[in-house]
Length: 119
Image (cartoon, rainbow, N blue to C red; front, side, top):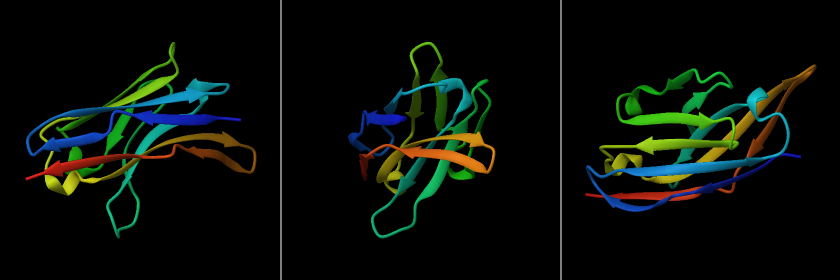
């Protein structure tokens, strides 16, 4: 069973930076695509970015050039470095792990961490 624990959320002023971390416990970390999602209050959850086991990354357009995903396969962790934050980035951020199986995929979520950006 996989467990994900996020840390690093908090409050920051517009233009500031934060780094979120996600600790993965379980087996076969490198088999999992690790992603960060976010959910602003009253809105639907959206994918922010993802990193494959080999380190390939992808991001939504609104965070490109500001957010950087990285993973440490030796420590089973993934980090989301967020720079030049703005109030639209305010949300609960969730770590997600996904791995394929024969008839679909396994998927796991962390408990979420709040990021608040003040103007």
